[in-house]
Length: 411
View 1 (tube, helix red, strand yellow):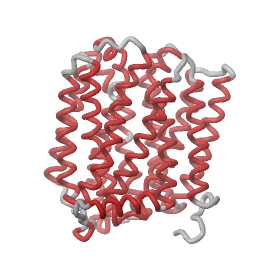
View 2 (spheres, rainbow, N blue to C red):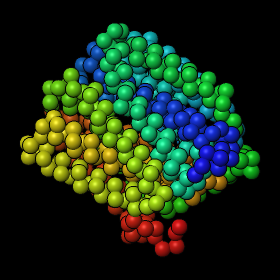
View 3 (cartoon, rainbow, N blue to C red):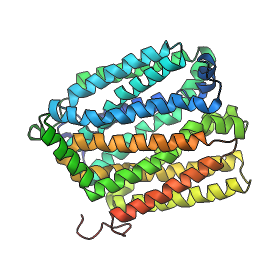
View 4 (cartoon, helix red, strand yellow):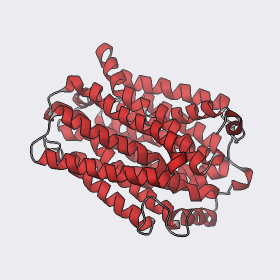
């Protein structure tokens, strides 16, 4: 794809500015999750949270708000267009970040975090819908992969940003950074992003049309299969995010290494996205993602065995977890693209439904895994492995027993 051909789509920008904006929209979510991981003990102490596992609610509350509210954004964007709904969500995100920075109780923090997730959900739904408005098939997968390279720089840097803030200021300033970032993205999108929805795809908010769009989304075999598989894979990832600070502090007693190793692990996902962008056009989404899913299962299974047998060390954990995240970085953009590809005519609703299912399902699975933290990494690694196996079973059902190639009758 050349710059000239990529400039034709409805976004009206050059290819790489468009990719950068989509990455920034998606990064609002990653920053809101990962920047505060080093600060969880301080936030817990300030808000009177006495049980260490209860600090995971600071992450899970955000994810639940993020997941549940996605169900409405697709319908709104299909009726009113992508641009105004995106602006609305970003305003909520900025306001909630301000509220969280002044939270004086656990309850107020939970309210602010849920509201922050509600605002960020618009960026997730609308970013995918906007990309689908402008691209399809392998071109869509390429755009998503390139966006994820920039997007995944945020998980790499966010814990270090949070730690750096803690060195010079109280934890509340982390939410000040979120406020500033959200405001910058809001201004950028307001100035540069046009409406991308096709006029013929504009749908009134009618019960019948909403039900029809939901029916298409929830009865398209391939879309449902990859949506559910993605939810289980995300469950393992959210379990890791929920308990990462405790793993490094309580299991390995290596909090000084937390941000560095976390960055290396997240960097494996970024590298995988770059690799995927280069190979997906030649090999196809199924070959890449199915191979990555098998690698994901193999690595997490090995990790669970080693952890259960007591052969777990800091750098072994880092290597195996990095390999697992590399596989995740190969399968995630392709699973998302394959789930969306048949649903271009209902892209807004489809994106919101898929985001709701994968995020809420993944958040609840991740919280369940995280709540079983017992001073070892066995619950985490076992949870990862089980989620991967279930995802494989779902993919096999969706593809009618075939891996690496489409099922008969599918492109």
